[in-house]
Structures are given as structure tokens and as C-alpha cells.
Image (cartoon, rainbow, N blue to C red; front, side):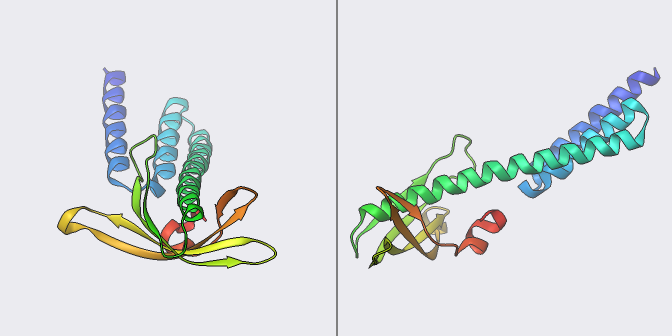
Length: 171
């Protein structure tokens, strides 16, 4: 009887954690995963120190994995925009879009090349780019200034800004 009550409480706790994860931002995933692992392992081993250690380890691993995934998504978006910038002449514009394997963080907008910067060190292009959110009457467009430079035959993102505002702490 006591074991059945424990299992029901653990299941209810798990559902609460899943609901909290669904409602929280991505920055909370590691904390919730660590807390869930810590509580579960502490309850199983009856040793809070073991639960705490496991919880901290799971949180660190989850946070590192999440940051790695978002950095790769950011790089894919930047590479897509840089490739478009490389193919445009000054004054030209084109739509851009990125679609990830997991339907989260898919972005789109427009990019316009404003000038070419040709130096002995590198060929670069400055551009303005938009990130569009919403559709129709709800469409909001935020504009950013960026640069892309050619490295061998590949155009790469060359601007640290608008890193903080646009990319958060991932840059």
C-alpha cells in the first residue's frame, strides 16, 4: 500500500515537472531536469547527498546540451543569411528562412545588401536584415545591421552585433 502511494506521488510530481517545463522558457530546462533527477534518485537511495549530486550533474549536462543545440541553430541561421548576402549585389534584397529539424526557432525575413567593403585582407558586404514574426496584420519586422565576409569561396557571418539583442547569450 505504501509503495503504491509513493508511485502515485512520484507520477504526480513527474507530471508537474513536465507541465512546468512546457510552460517555462528554455533556460529552465536544466534546472527542472536536475531537480527531477535529484528528487527521484534521492527518494530511491534515501540519501539526499546522492540526490543532490545527481541533480547537479543532470542540470549541468542538460544545460550544456541545450546551449550546444542552440549554438548550432544560430550558426545555421547565420550561415544561411551570409550565403544570401554573398550572392547579392549592392541594392538587391532577398527573402531568407531557416527551418530546423525540430519545429522550434524557425525564422524568416529579408536581407538587403547596403555596401561592399573590398580591402586587401577581405571582401565583405554590409547588409540590413529583418526578422519577421507573426503574419498578416500581426506581422512585426525587426531590422538589424550585419556584415558577411568571404573566406575562400564561402561567405561567413562577420558581425558580433546584434549578438546580445538578437542571439541572447549564445554568441
